[in-house]
Each structure stands twice: as C-alpha cells, then as structure tokens.
Image (cartoon, rainbow, N blue to C red; front, side, top):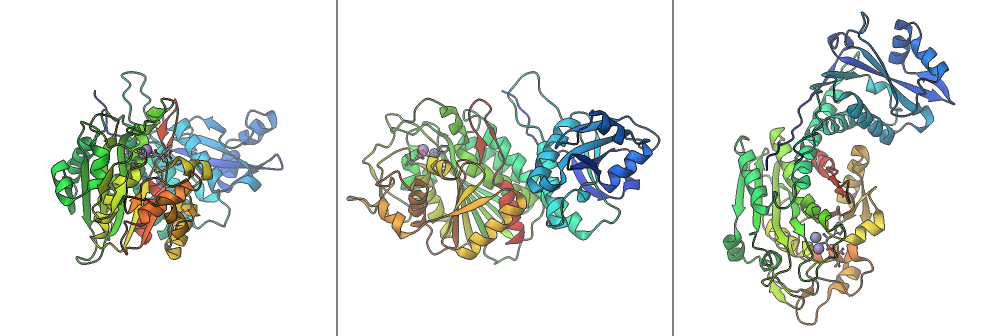
Length: 500
Ligand code: BES
Ligand code: MN
Ligand code: ZN
C-alpha cells in the first residue's frame, strides 16, 4: 500500500500589503443588524471596485453570513484577485467563528490559490491579544491546508496553497511570534493526524517506532530509544506486557529525548497511550464502531507530533516523549479477567476487565517516566467512554491535583481553542479501585465516575512528579463512517511546551 506523509507545505509570514501583490487578497465583511458593515480593507476594496460589494449585498448575491464568499477576477488594483469573506453578525463574532471561517476559507481557496493574503487582524474584537490571534490564524489555516493521509487510489483532493500571508501595515513582534507558534502547532497536529488516521494494519507499534527513528535522523539533537518486548520484560513492565501478550504483533516502548535546553535541566515529559487497536481483549468490545478503535493510539500520536514539531522548531527546552504501543486483542495468549500481574512500580494489579488496558500500559509508562525525574509530566490517553458521556467533544477531561498546572492548561486551552475541563481525581475515586487479591484492581467497583476512577488508578504510578492526565477519548477523533483525527490536543501541548 502506498501513501504519502502529509506535511505542512504552506509557509506563513507577516507582510505589508505592497509585498503581497501576487496573492489573492482576502478581506472581511461583517453584517450589523443585517446591514453590511465593512472592515477598513473591505471598504477600500468596495471603493476600488466601484461599490460592487454594496450592489451584491443589495441584490442578495452576497449576504455576508459566516463563511460565504465573493470572488473578483484579477484586475489592475488587485493583480492576484480579491475575495470578500462574510464574517457574519459582528456581535456574534468570536474566536470560534474566526476558526470556522478560516477553515471555510482554506476549503474554498486552498484547492486553487497559490498564495492567499488575509487582513485578519481587523476581524477579531479587542479582547484577544494579537499574538493569540496570529497563532490561531496560522494553526487553523496551515492545519486545514494540509492533506489528510489517504489510502484511496483515485479522487485524491489536493491543496495548492503554498503561501499564507498575514497582512498588516505594521508588523509587530507579537504577530511574528504568534505565527511561528501557530506553525509549530499545525506541524504537531498534522503529524498526529497522519499517525492516528492510518489503520492499525499499517500503523503498528513497529511502524510508530520506525517512523520516530527515521524522522529523528534528520533532526539534530533528538535522540530516540526503542525498547522491544525483551527489554520491556527485562525492565519489569508486567502491566504493559499483559496487554501486549494477546497479539502476535509485538509491543514497542518509544523514548524521545529532545535536548534544546540547559544540559542538566529537568525535561517536560509527555506520555502517550499507544494502543494501535483496542478490541477489548477477552473482555471483547461489541462489533459496532469497533473500527474507531484504531484511534486508541491518539495519545501516542499527539506526543510524537508534539515532540517532533518542538524539535524541528528548535525549542529551547528539554522534552521527554514516551509512548507505550501495543494491540489489545483476544487470543489464546491474551490476559484473562482475574489474572494478577506485577507492574514496573512493583505494585500488583488484578485485571478484572481486559478492556481497561489503557491504564495498564500507562501504569508502566508513567512509572518509568517518573524515574527520569521530569519537571512535570502530562499523559494523553483515549482512556474512557465515561469522559465522552461527561463532557462530549468541546473539552478534553483534565485530571490533576496540581491547581497551578490545571490553571495553566485551562488558560492555554482557551487561547488555542483546544480546551480542557478540570475533573476530580483523588482518594474518593482511588477507593473504588480496591482489590481483595492484589494492591489495586484495573476496574472500579462501579461504572459511575469512570473517568475519575481511571485517573485515580493512574495517579498511583506517578511517584512524586507534578502530573496531569488528559482523557481525550471524545476529542481526539470523530467516529463512525466519517471518522478522522482532529489533531487535538497537539496544539494545546505544543503551546504548553513553549510557555511552561
Ligand atoms: N479505549 C477505550 C476508551 C474509549 C471508549 C475511547 C470510547 C474512545 C471511545 C478504553 O480502553 C476502554 O475500553 N475503556 C472502557 C473502560 C471500562 C470497561 C471500565 C470504557 O470506557 O468502556
Ligand atoms: Mn479498552
Ligand atoms: Zn483503549
């Protein structure tokens, strides 16, 4: 099977209008109480085009509602052509509308326009900082302009845009920094989406390991270590191995070390659940929508995407990326409900439900990472159906007892529109994980509070490291026939690495 690695192809730069003459100029028009309310650039365009905009609006051929557009041919005034984007009612415009609009613009102009130039800083109300607007602009456009991986052999949609321009008369340091951060976010998201969208017969643990090793070869300062099943066993990762043992496809433990900071500075650690397929094991899942479980390695994909993007951007911090990858299948060699295994941390775990495999692989991955003494440790996992019930897809579930860490992640989530919502974790939930035969059970005594009891289980294996857990079961991908990776939470993580 042949497929192409999608990458962020387009560049993004801040320039003054006179430097963007080849580009398709894109200006915005609001409505206010259903009357046309032109932004300054749109007003200029209207005058230059003999009030064509006003006429289209009066006639109803341009309504100005969010995401609609009107395209004018190349002319002397606009050698690259000009398009007017409907921004919708001015009172309703906010960061979310901005994002939807840019996605529409990418879908409309991306398939044919080589260069697109936006006067986007005129659009947002003053409550968002220019840097954040610029970051969101670059993240959204570059992500939307990047191809999705496809195994189709025909009818492949191509994107043509090579240059995205942020137009402004005055180019601020904030805008330039925001665009660069946004580019790094999109880079992380595109890699994440690529890995997550690949089916599990292609994207095996070994595939992930090879991808990371091969990509790292061209990045100076990024070291990769791959542990095979022998090494994993020798280290004593009995919880991880209990999941992997049901499949003939061997597990891989992937360690990425980016040394962009001071030699001895403790790294920021990102740990990802990498179940390349979750059939549930002996506690088999129902058939309906089981294919969605190729996304059970989204946590791992977010870690790999984020660390590679940080390394490619030359981030001046130390980062440790850790991924535990395997399949969770039923077979004659699979772990059974009632089995007891010993984890890397030395604690024994009673397996009551083999479909609670994410917490098993993370128990060992977190314990291993904690021994590296990171400054902070975040884990990302499509861990529970319960978090989908609780929050749906507006927010990833955030579990931590560290309130300043929670505050920082919530704030970054708001600015990147990759939002998280704090959920409880603590002794009241840990109690639910009791076992009569082992130190802890892998399933709670009740389904209620399932996302928090899963997080409480993880907390047992984090040592004394500052730690937060993101349950991305509802946010990482869209399910069903239109299933695809969203790239979340890669832009949250990327921004966290930059700002922590
Ligand atoms: N990977 C699943 C969680 C999941 C469910 C992700 C739906 C995305 C969509 C996880 O391994 C799992 O099976 N969790 C079980 C735990 C339960 C048996 C306590 C679940 O949530 O059903
Ligand atoms: Mn499962
Ligand atoms: Zn799972």
